Length: 183
Image (cartoon, rainbow, N blue to C red; front, side, top):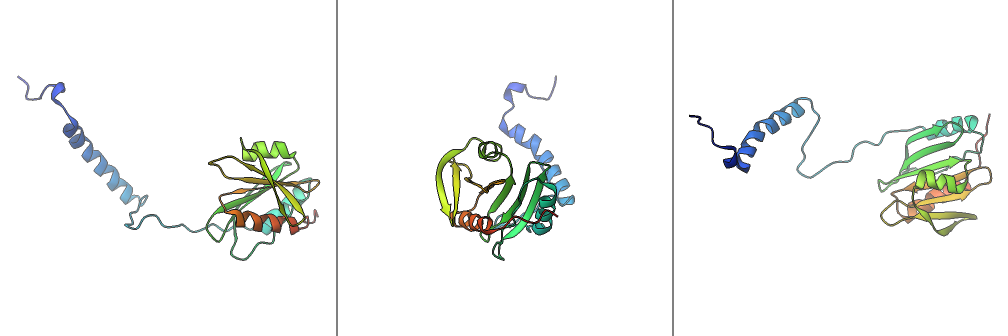
């Protein structure tokens, strides 16, 4: 005769006591590997990586067949990332003073193609006039807004989690920037 109870009599308590040692072992391993921490007041902001936007954009201006602009942003804006899609686009990401991420993508593709590629399913919902430059606004409820402006040989897209003021500052800075030298 077996001392084990029939499976039909197992319940959530048996499951709990079976899983408890496994969970404790996982926590100990994670603690030893320093892969998790606990703070009673919630998560803390990590350090923003530094990215040399000036050098990256200067190199993009040499490599890409269209004008690349470097926006002159306030000192409390920080470039934190960037990439180049050869022959197609240059993107630099910025962190606003409020901690929001904003990105500027410059490309020679048509506005509709750039909007579809970067903004996805959003559709044109309006226009913003910043300085002497018209920005077409692409938005969709629950998603980040994207602004696109045509600079002749270049289309510039701004997208991110920033507020309206952040979009205005970035759009004005890009609009005031001259194309970087290609040599």
